[in-house]
Image 1 (tube, one colour):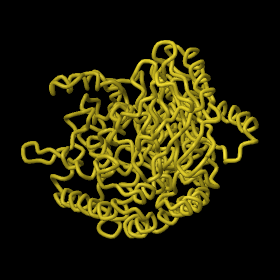
Image 2 (tube, rainbow over the protein chains, first blue to last red):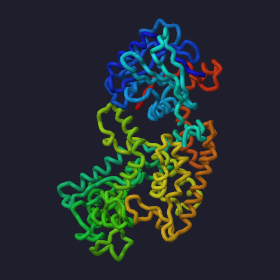
Image 3 (cartoon, rainbow over the protein chains, first blue to last red):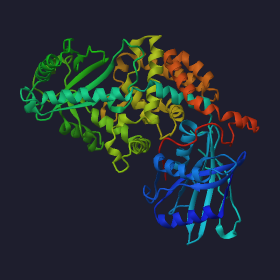
Image 4 (cartoon, chains in turn cyan, red):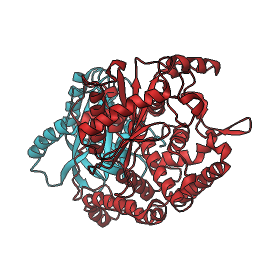
Length: 170
Length: 411
């Protein structure tokens, strides 16, 4: 089953704002999504940490993101589907938006040992002032990483989301 | 090695849990640290007979490398190896016997001051203190003097990097009767801090990733990874060595324990064979495949060079006792078979059942409990996935608590 994540226009705009704020530093956070069907999710919120990243490193620390996720859950309490942590996102301002070895190792480690049994990793890069390049990868316990599908609701083609990469061999 | 190269999911989980179960609890490391620091402070007290020689007390061996394992039974001790290096003494000033006597006298005073019941013991190279307070600590204290100058000459003659001489020490050996009681330059050499530095550098990427995660977990995001002692984290190499040590202990216990592969050989060969694998299961597979490659032949003699002293052969006793070499090879073959047989299995219970015969039932049952504890929190996610028709847990928000609780590093 391929995981698909629909990103509403409003969330894409928030992401663009964060990426501009982040500049040349990596930024990122958690993806909070509503399950609409098995394997299908809609992004309802993003947490973000603008402080901890460097040019080539981002650390996802649970505490600040968990607090932000609480607020997102409150704001989305009227939704019919279950809303929960879907995975992680971070930017690669200086590199192509594909998972690095460290990214793959961290996500694999989480789904295998310490966290949820599956999670998505979205990596984004701002191109120019408005266009975003992005990939989504699904990590599932006992399975190899797999490319997922990003869908922009009411998509404008130049948003430039890319899914054309192949998961790295571990 | 990689995830697609024959490591089953269940085997991977079993190996991780075995390493967790074998690990010495952090409070034991803290206790060990307190013990050697306490001895260091004692040797620097005002009345100390050795204070003027500027004793430097530090830990060596498995506690320094982060590879000790829990004793197999409550009757066994943790071996804590301590070096006392008298930094302002030289080989030109004192004989090995007199250096040993100096330290022994101070250890007796330490024993009296700390109310340790057992007498100070002695072996070929060190003095021994056994705590009888239920701490299960057996402290071997190695007297030494600095030996960097001598070591540089040795390294130069082998055309090796002289930086390896940093931390080199000269130690005593009561069996060498011709040199033990006279002032001579001819002392046995050692370099435990150099060995520890080599061990760290051989796995620096994995080590620093875990040190960073350790700091993150403590909220010390701005601290340096160098500040985190190697024993505060557990790398794939450390875990692999721990598991192989237990396999070795069990294998030789059923045969001739006198022929047991010594830990420094197991550690050195494992470190040479390790190539940065991120998972313990991959690291063990690589180590077992390649560890024999660093056993060299020099003039017909099996040679496992000390990485900080190429003139030292860790396998020196194999020449006199060739059965030790044979035992090493037989054990290695057994380990390859025992782990190789189950490494493709995806059922953790079957893996643990099989490994129980080779690693001991107490350890394996402990690991099984750890598997059950972590699986319990995840079991709820299986049901909705099954309902959705997926063979794996599935891409469904089930009953599991999904929020991450541990920091992650991305790059």
